[in-house]
Image (cartoon, rainbow, N blue to C red):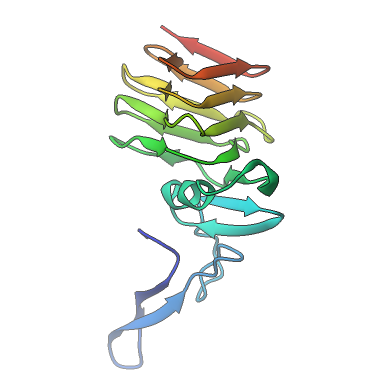
Length: 178
């Protein structure tokens, strides 16, 4: 699946042939409307109401308009490999909960934070949550804004966290780089 949680078609065996069948993904539960399997990889909770997404990018976008009073949390629901893509966070005040899962990438950075008003707190409510740069990039690259690391393991073959003009608070977790 790619994109937002909307109507989708899937091939199913009909009485005489294969046919496209319309199904929906419930953004309130993250489950497929046909098979009831969870297909969401992340959720965004704003003011106590959770919405489920197929991509981390969509979950982050939903949180980027949040302010501190929203108590917004983006929660990983599965391991996510961004491949050669970066996950940019350009605004918002929210928590990224690794929830025991891995956020990995092999591009120059995994998580990129920019904009002076951006404030992201990284936690791990599960066990073993990680942000991992598989190549020589940075696990977290912050050019401005505030990053608070309260939990999780952040690893890179270069710098675990690289910052130019941002504020980085470290109160927990593990950070390593070669």
